[in-house]
Amino acid sequence: MKQFFGKTSDGKDTSLFILQNSKGTKAEITDYGATLVRFVLKDKNGIARDLVLGYDDASGYERGDSFFGSTVGRVANRIGKGRFVLDGKTYELTKNDGPNTLHGGRDFYNKRLWDMEEETEHSVRFHLFSPDGDQGFPGNLHITVTYTLTEEDELNIVYTAQSDTDTPLNLTNHSYFNLGGHDSGSVLDQCLVLHADRVTETNENLIPTGNLISVEGTPMDFRRSKPIGQDIREEYYLLKTGKGYDHNYVLSGSGFREVAALVCRQTGIGMTVRTDLPGMQVYTSNFLDHEPGKDGATYGFRDAICFETQYFPDAVNKENFPGGVLKAGEKYQSRTSYTFAVYR
Image 1 (tube, one colour):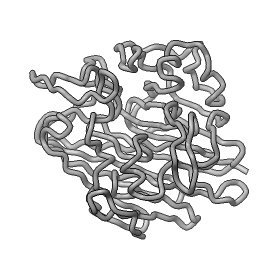
Image 2: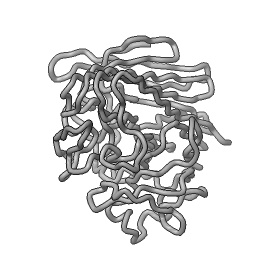
Image 3: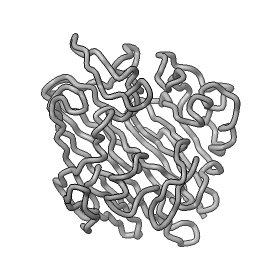
Image 4: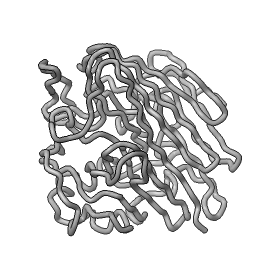
């Protein structure tokens, strides 16, 4: 089902596409930024909960700078010093995160109107053309993002891309999850498991040093379930630089596999994250500050958690980091899913 979602500041109409299964679970996605606006699920008491932070209409997404629910590219996360060398040529990008480039620099993909290519009752596919030189990156790039809602309350996100020139590529979804509901406040008492033995060490600007460090004996260890907030205030150098969790976890295993699980005891809602990518940025919304959101809500410090599946940050500048560059003519495809369940 398609609904009007407001006009952009330059007068363009935006749309909201509503996917629903037989249980009444709904995923609502807009063509503005190929963005997940709502994910609505009934909790253990039968109360419908919207589990992602967001805005009421396109103007909110146009104004906002937190990337709520958005498709991020051409390169999600950070590129050190806003530059890279590829095929012998140096490329300079816009520096928008201190001395570094974050989520593409400027003219973000989530601030663009994507083309809706195909819609069914349970899925919607969007396309974006990113021309050579866009955001400073080489190559004419075609991207598609397909959202599918299953009867098992799984939201699948499949990315494809193809370029006529070698180009860095790191696409992700930047949804902010709170299993108590988007307007329920702090996420710190929700319990998290991460299937990861290591994280990428970062410097004071959150750029990887190239070292992979063990989580053993540190507050970064979520290999056994614990509340997100249990160790978040520890005097640990990575937590201090990130003002909480804002780090890339080196995911265990390969192929499409489970990499994380989150549970909220108050609502009985749990979610599982699966991906075929090697890394995932776990971000505890450390920079949210009185952000006006949907339904009159105001979002604050640590009111949600993001699971940004990805190639490692700054991979284009780190020879020992996997992937992150799409070769000319090759087809990129990746899949991430968020599956929800209710425990009574």
